[in-house]
Picture 1 (cartoon, helix red, strand yellow):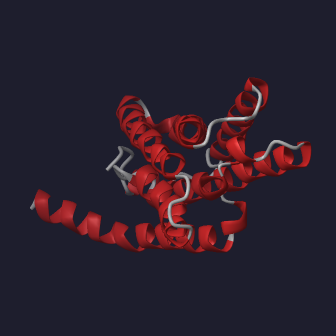
Picture 2 (cartoon, rainbow, N blue to C red):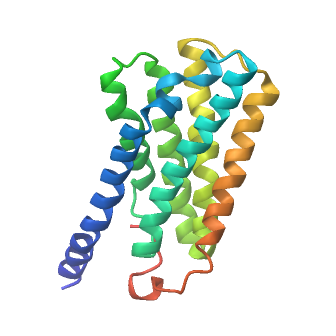
Length: 198
């Protein structure tokens, strides 16, 4: 009986997960020109205007990825295991196919950061899910962009100053935390869906 209830709950999750992943992939496709996964701005944009555009790319894709994960939270009241990795993959991998994976390490290393974020969020959900949206909003850009920068260094080398690349990571982390905080004021629907990570 418990197995049937679990299977039914997982089946109810499918429309939400498909919506989040497909919306992320479609938005990433149309925002291809702003993709830090493709452009690797920390290694390609040396001019001041290019640096401003590059930081903007990190903010745009932070909004995309964090927004998709928080959408899942607001609909399900929890974060299924692997959701961060799936969303980051939907944002980074499909477009890179059209660009022949030009900066492959800069495109694949963020997936490692997403896996670590998933593991951290599962642990936090078990410890106390109340602040999970804030933690997700902060951990996703922190870990994804840090590992992305490792990939940029391995593929083409970073030309941004430590202050600029550190500032981009810190500011996107703060922006993600604020976005997660906005989900805290939402009416509590989590009691009907369960509060733990799936």
